[in-house]
Length: 79
Image 1: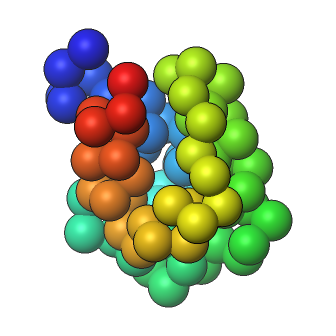
Image 2 (image 1 turned 120 degrees about the vertical axis):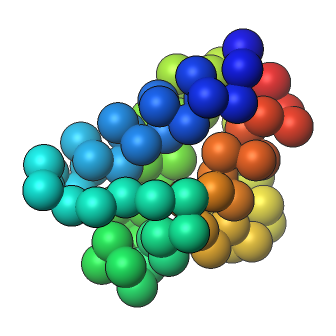
């Protein structure tokens, strides 16, 4: 799977979780600050991505991702 394909799925997932079709999501978007996600929404998004890509994102790794691009990179490295 290409990085571009992963990026599209990640962006769609975050858009679905925050339920804001007008939200502007970029790779530099801070998940907690720019997207205004709380920890529950973040866990929901990561859970959805784990299912989508058939991977497990340990809590220790989840705490390290700050931007949407970090999530894309993490998935690219682990699929």
